[in-house]
Every structure is written in structure tokens, then in C-alpha cells.
Amino acid sequence: MTDLDTDVLISRILDRQAEPQEFDAFATAADADPAAWKELLGALRDDVALGVATDARIDVAAHVEAPIIRLHAPRMLPVWSGWAAALLLAVAWLGWSGQVGLDAGLNGGDHLAGGPTGATGAQPVTAGVFGSDGPRLRDGAIVPAADHVLGELPPELISARPAVEGEGVEVVYVRRVLERAHVDSAWSIGTDELGRPAPVRVNLELLVASDVH
Amino acid sequence: MTGETGQEQGPDQGPDNPAEVGALWREHRRWVAAVLLAHMPREADLEDLLQDVAVTVVTRIGELRDASRLRGWLRTVAINTARMAGRKMKVRRAVLRPLASEDNSLPDPSARQPWAGVAARAEAESALALAQSLPEEYREPLLLRCVRGLSQKQIAETLGLTETTVETRLARARRMLRGHVERTDTSRAAPKLRALS
Image (cartoon, rainbow over all chains, first blue to last red; front, side, top):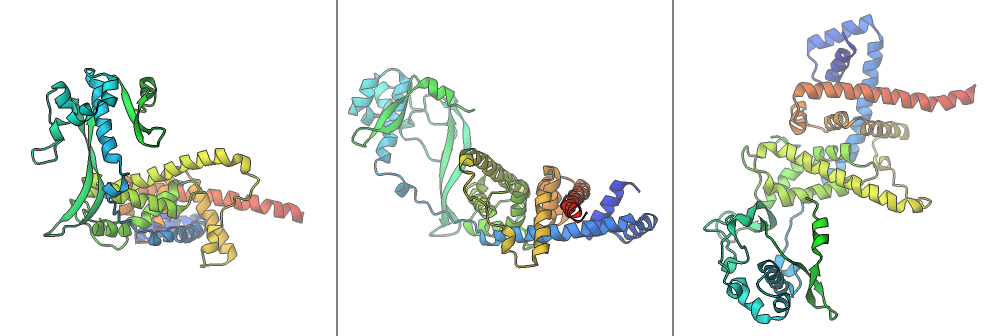
């Protein structure tokens, strides 16, 4: 019997997995080499000690419950967020269309209100990832071509609650569409001297350098 | 699949409402804690990490398409959480090193264990510390084996291994642990012997 055989046998005895003939085999081996009894005793002692310590540590799990996430997305966002989101989309579109000057994009309220398709005549395209009965981007939004949609990431659950009527559960979730686009400039929302949200130009080189993928 | 309560989950679909997710979490949280224990940095707080895992489970359980892979998925979430804690600890250690003279010692977890005397507690804590120092592929099955009610088959399923492989790893892990314990005992005894001579 090799050392590994003996170790496996001892391990099976400790785990209450050993068959009667394995107990006999161990007894025979221990008769030939009494040190095997010492090994069994040592392994049993370690097992008890480790079991006690591990059990005591993981008992803490009994106090950890799965959180119930009750997020109300609209309330989580600042009051100006809707306006800022619209601005961001519009500015982003202005950046890649190349047909409207930067200053006009930032200062011309008509452009923002009119939306990208109205301003340039670009054809609205529905993102390919959305099914016929799923949500749609209003006015074709700013997706310039369907092949710029690379795919869809798993949806992110915001909240879930039992449906008010009937069976099932009402969920609020975010659909995440993976897109690719060519842009001439990029902007983020910062704040002006009065603390109001304002577009801030992002250095494209820094943007590329910060890409970790 | 059978959790700590021994109840069976649905075979095909993952849970799709908060009550089911809560029940699922309660079934599996003990062995998830053992996985965290096998991978987390020693100074991390197990309860905090469990909370992180629970949040991830609640928010991302929808990504699990095949309920038969639940154990593997939960293990991956736990390992990622433990590793992230490890990275944070590394940064924290680098930042706090200049403040090392302050008393930042952590409370002794064994002090919360009312089950035995001081010597037995010390022996148990020492065994756990030595088990945590074993190579990853050995310490994880060894700690999972300590979870009450978790069968060898379930351990194999969790680790994505065959039962035979788990059995062999357990045997080797116990052999390594024994060796560590004997060396530790010898090194502790040596100063006493020197003092007596």
C-alpha cells in the first residue's frame, strides 16, 4: 500500500465514506506499520480542529440575508438628469455627424430641440436588437446604422415586485445595447461656474488611453 | 440541486422573484462562506464579503441561464469577490504602511467562539490558518468538506471536478495539513526544550 493509498483510506474513514473492506485493509496495514494508527489519530485531530474553526467562522452566514433591492430610478437621479441626458445624446450626435458646428451644437437650442434626424436629414434606423414588441428608440434616436449595434449585454435588474394584477412579477430593468460609432469629438457632463450641468469636451487621446478593453 | 436545507431547486430555470432568490441564498450561503474563506485575504471581514456576494446574486442572478450551473456560478461570484477584496487590501496596505505603528490589530475571531477552552480554540484557529495557507486547489475542497451537510458529490459539482479527484485532493490536503501542524508543533516546542536544557 502506497502512502497515497493510506492517505486516501484515512481520508475516506474521516469522511464516513469507507466500506467495511477498507476498514479491514487499514487495520491490516496498521498491524504491519503501527505508525498508521498515529497518522489516523493525527488526521482525526486536525479534522476536528479545522471543522470547529471553519464552522464557527461560516456561522456568520446565518446573519447575511439577500437584500431586497427597491430602487426607484427616477428618484435616484438629480432633477436636471433628463435634460442632461438629452443634451448628452444631442451633443454626441453632433460630434459624429460632422455636419453641424460645435458652437451651434452647444448654443443653438433649436438643434437640441429638433433632434438629430430633423437637423441633418439622417435616416432614422431602429436598433436591430429590439424586437417588434420591445422598446424603441424615439425618432430612431441617434444610431446611424444598424450594423453599428454589436449586441446586447445582459439586462440589469433595477427592481422587482409582485404584479399588481394577475400572476408574475413586474420588473424594472435596464437594457444595455453595445454599439460602435465613429465620433469626431466626445463630451461629458460637467458643471459651469454656477453649478449647472454643462458639456465638457473630452480629450480624444485621453479617451483612447483610458480604454481598458 | 440540494442546498443546506436539503430542498431541491427547480431543474431548469433560475429563480425569478425576490422570495425565490432569498430562499436560494439561504440554502447556499454557508458553503459560499467556505469558498470565501478559502480565497479571501486573512484580514478581510467574512460577513462584509458575504454581503457583497449576496448583492451580486440578487442583481445578477438573471444572467444565469442554466440553473444546473448555479453552484459553479455562485462559486465564481464568491471567488471574484474575494479576489477584489484582496486587491483592495493590497492597496490599503500600501497606503497605511506609514501608519503601521498605530494599533491596527484585528479582533481575534476565536474570542467569539464559546465552544471550547483556550487551548482548543487556539488549536482550531491554528488548523484553519494552516489550511488557508495550502495551495488553492487543496484548501478549497478541504474547507468545503467542513460545511455540514455538503456531500462529496456536491463539492465535486461546485468545483467542477469528479468525485474521485475531490477525494484525492482531500487526502493530499489532509496530508499537507498534518505536515504543517507537525512542523508548527516542533517549532513551538523547540524554545521550550532549549529553555529546559
